Image 1: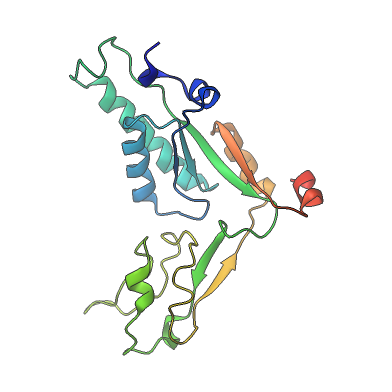
Image 2: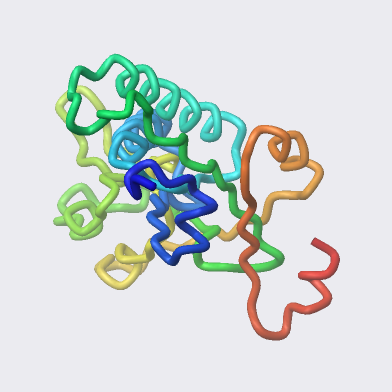
Length: 198
């Protein structure tokens, strides 16, 4: 069997799992779509996204675009058999309590002094704290871009940045279960009752 055309289940069983983790809190739709497209073309076995209907749809759109591109590919060395790589599984994550993967940074930009050097903006890997522009005031954290890494917390010179944890209800996520292939449950020691309820 050509290992480049291995199904996600076969990759998992063989110990060759290749997973894109967009993040349980990351909701920047253009980035999720583009990352899903690129990683599907690269042969990812799984794309792990936020349990949010719009995010799931963006990932599905990216995977569908990758399938069209792969099918129209003229690269006979990559697809000599005429087959295209199997689509990656789409996975969402749930949490049974507070978890650092399910949080967002937040602060009131009105309390941030205009002369602050904003080391938080320079340090943010997701560009979730964009600088002010000549036409737009400083807006603080762009929630859909923040994936809760927490790097901004210790560098704020005034200690203004906090995190806000969240937990989606199973009722809100239930409709998504018919549209995804896998679910990842985040839990921790001491959460047995919460895990059982979830």
